[in-house]
Image (cartoon, rainbow, N blue to C red; front, side, top):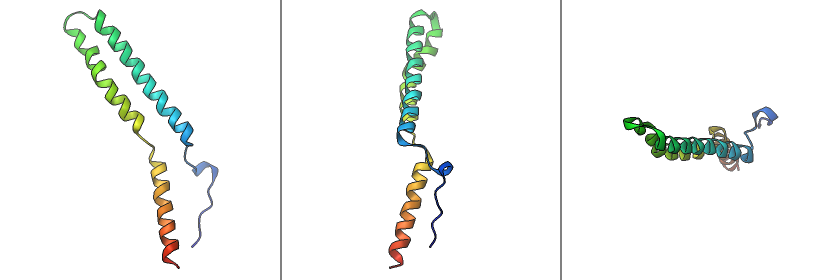
Length: 91
């Protein structure tokens, strides 16, 4: 069995960089939620429903976006388990 050497371009994003990117996207969504909350106080009539919907829905969307982990990491784990399984089968 031959293993492919890892190249620098095929390595996944570091966990610190990935976590930082997810925190930025979460912060942007929460900032947008604050804007919607402010708009709830100044919108007249039925128009208040638009920013109110943003205030209610944006936290769920932000949490879902923050919890998404890129598939390259899961793909990497899957590859490692296959390598370990094939090594144990050969003995």
